[in-house]
Image 1 (cartoon, rainbow, N blue to C red):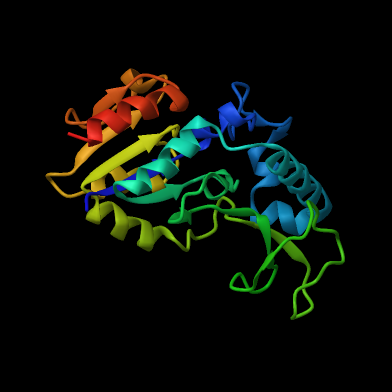
Image 2: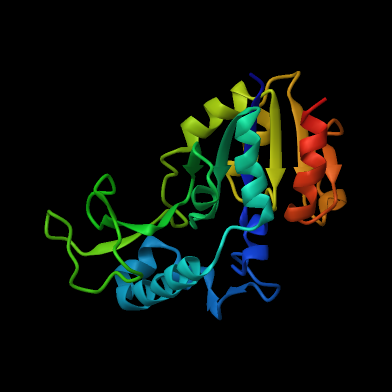
Length: 227
């Protein structure tokens, strides 16, 4: 069975009402990224960081998977489909995708502040200050912040190397090391890029560019991989 590996970014969830990580002004919901997404900020002002991600979690719970998420899940009927996502939302899973790797964590989970291997499901939409892990440390969002290692990166590289078709949807290809995935594929792998600004991307000439938003691009994708 043909293996399809799909690498998704914030652009696929925009149509579900979730904003991209960075706005045109360089801010995320009025905050500099450095103020809400680094270990240093957590150490300096954990209440701000906790509040920020509590709001992101509320937004995630209120959002629904869109056509692009559902279409990727439907591809599992005919192909061996694996999703590698930079997104911390769970819209792929809620659409029905069974094989999903989250490179940057999951907003609906928490983790220990002192042992990142201690990960817990969150009931509701909040982590409160004073909620502790089994070791007694404050729970924090299960999100990979700037400056932290990406635990699932090696698994993602393995998947990219095994792909017969590698598809990139809604990511700027500017966040490393994830942006390297497209270059880890085997020589005969079909490469497809779906993004409204696809023509502006500097990628290998063999990449098939579909300059559409995710919900439209997935229709073209289904036709391309059927060949």
